[in-house]
Image (cartoon, rainbow, N blue to C red; front, side):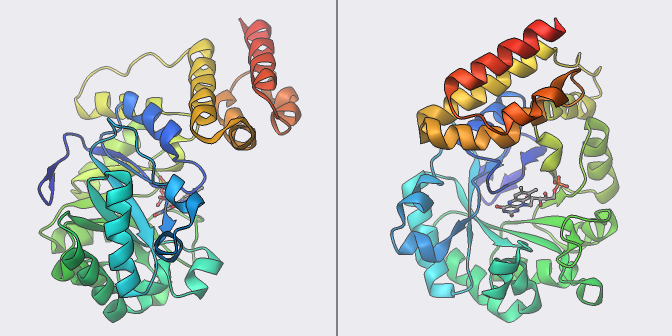
Length: 322
Ligand SMILES: Cc1cc2nc3c(=O)[nH]c(=O)nc-3n(C[C@H](O)[C@H](O)[C@H](O)COP(=O)(O)O)c2cc1C
């Protein structure tokens, strides 16, 4: 599949997820078969103002290609400048514009999914970004704002007219946030209407779901978000399902632990021990789902504050379960 002139040799993408899909986790997901990754969303305004933390979110490892750099904002000029900057800072392959974020403080500023209620402003933004950079532009949207404004099809057609090279659709409205089921029918409708590639997103939690969403919607790629939490193996399994091969053996406890520790060590190298520990408090227990005795360690996991803590918790789990 081509996104503009960029070849993507996979039907599986890791969703952009603020606070989750950092460079360390993305590298692990790619190792297990994610063929396309995106940075966490960054504010165009903050980037243009030179904010250091925002720039650091744009870090891509040298072999992380193809990859999209996601920006959000609602001022067309600022978005155009941010897109140029984001590509030069990151070395990413294309810009992805976030028009799906449902979070209150984002939509109150007119950014993210709020743009689905203002297609003209959205058109100006996409066009301004497409005109400003020599690389492709993609747009990530939702089903719509709410039940009364489920305009994904018209909105995606507008994005295509404005110069988007692909559209990713999360089949929930902003009003649904993350509740209820994702509507795969609307993704199918978007796919039927567009000539550019469509990426289907929402509720892919197993390898079978990945195969089903692609078959049902006819989309070019499936994008996996929460299904990858503590489970980068979902990409390996989904690739096997798509190839019609046998399902690989599920990872052993020691494999899960070693990947969790590797993710942590990579984060220490990129962000320092303090930040890496704070983040590990959240994701480490995701690797332990279904592991006996792990609930008794949950409290300790929420207090991880050093590399030593990670190693001692990991050792205790290994000894208790092997
Ligand atoms: C913790 C979290 C952070 C997210 N951050 C972003 C983001 O930065 N940009 C974005 O476009 N979507 C973001 N999303 C939405 C996901 O990309 C995806 O659309 C959504 O989770 C639905 O896919 P899923 O059912 O596979 O999880 C986020 C979702 C979660 C759960």
